[in-house]
Figure (tube, rainbow, N blue to C red):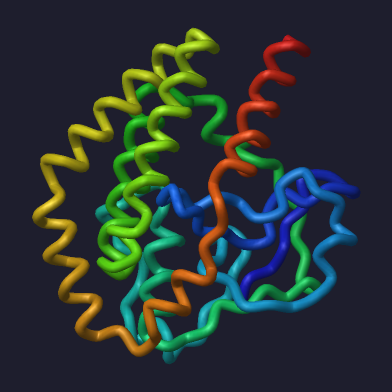
Amino acid sequence: LCARHLACRVNVDNVGLDLLDSGNFVTRGRYIKKDKFTNSCDLISASGCCSLYRINSILDVGVFDESYFLYCEDVDLSIRCVLNGWKCIYEPKSVISHKMSVSTNKVINYELILRARNNAHRVYICNIPLSILVFNIPFRIMSFILTFAGYLLLFDYTNLKALFMSELYKIKNIKKFLAENARRMKLKKISSWYIFRKQKFFLFFYCLYYSDIIKKKIHV
């Protein structure tokens, strides 16, 4: 069960997570007015800061994977539940107030950025059916090129370095991730089509992301 949490009294910070065809899991509904999310629906993933789990689902798939430590551990648990036939449901009547990244923004550095990117590669490759991974390769390439260009234009060399180092991490660990993927796909109780149709085209979300960065730089 996924609640929504608010960045302020008017706008939503998070109503669960969406899967993009670029391989990213992104916050659903960020900065959009809260009255746009009044209907319950099933999602691909909940946000760990505002979710409830049935005890039987935890007994079925296990708890948070501590090796993630920080970033994407909530996505990993949600996807494992979904793959095993559990539903991730957004409930609009359940609301919490959330000051987004108020803790990590104080200590954000290259190591945390790299960890976030590494964990994002891992959770995607380990949990998404192989047929979808292959289908999404062109979108992954396009998103990498656009991300590289975006950081270059913004002179954001920290994120640029993390982008390349995370790609090396992915290449180094790809066999291990695919082996884990094969193990999980043997146990999955839903069709790959269910995951595929939950995906969203990445370009719209990337435009929102970079426009938000540009606005922040202008205000600074």
